[in-house]
Image (tube, rainbow, N blue to C red; front, side, top):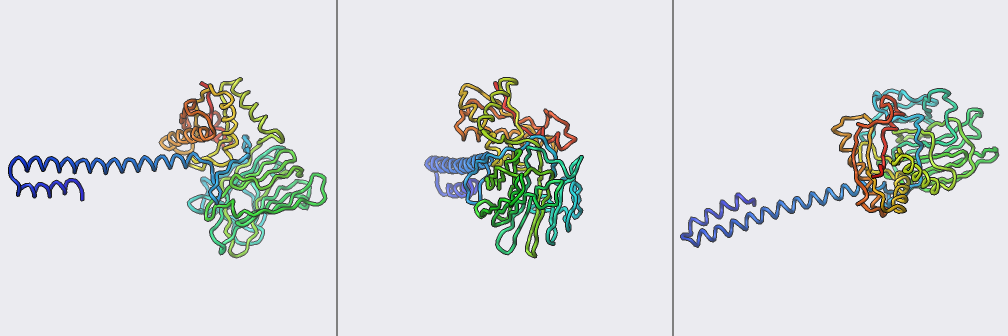
Length: 401
């Protein structure tokens, strides 16, 4: 019963009561009704505030595994983009324009509201990116490869993907192959000197989010190969043959459902050994020389302020620096590219900066020394007309104050 209706009933009752006692009685009941209305409004506001706090806490948290544990990943993405494709601007049902077809057929489709490459039914459907220059010799000594892939729900539907790391001068006999699906991951790693490959397998039951997008990440440094699923490292091989180019393949049977999107190949990444010490030196050097630390390795879910698990390695570097230098204060700036409007990018960059601040606080940094500022797309450092330039503009800056 709302307040207005309650007062109407009270007024009718007062007609039967006369004198000053009636007026006093009415005043007390009216006050109680108003107080009750205020309490109801306050309760609604408290619930909204609590929900906002929960949403903020969730957005600042790293990605979790299927079991719900937070993942702290040591993956470090390369910073110089060689190839990137999020399928924006592609025509539904057409062949993706940035790829070459090696076997069978693929097309652009939508899965769970996301533009993606759909691998059509057929055994050994395989594609490779169209990279400027030599299309069969573009992988550098140090690089990272990432993409999102879809894992369906239930045993009735399956998925299966294979990343081939190939060399330009052989027929595939000595290539490295990493195959993974809804249940497990298997690998066949080629040695630099040839000979037998290193084989292995691992269950992915606890790594995958069912009926959702999952993240594959690979880093290679001269001869060291690491592979991550949703931020968790599943392969760590020390003596691997370097490759020149790569392909993505799916092996179908009738119930397969295979989609990939947000593919990113970039030069650079983590050091081969003693990465923690060198990372720390890099932060200290940047602050000493320029007064700020700029990074493209703090990554978020597309269009959201949710930190990806692999971002925590970079955030940990900043946390280590601040814990070692507790008097240092940082303005944490979030920057976007120019894809989208200022109405979207400005608040998104602010929310992302706040997510980084919250993550640093979670690592023990005093929040008093941090201030989040969203810059949107207003301060680009590269040309937004190219994919490489947009990738550089999507960054987080830590400005010493």
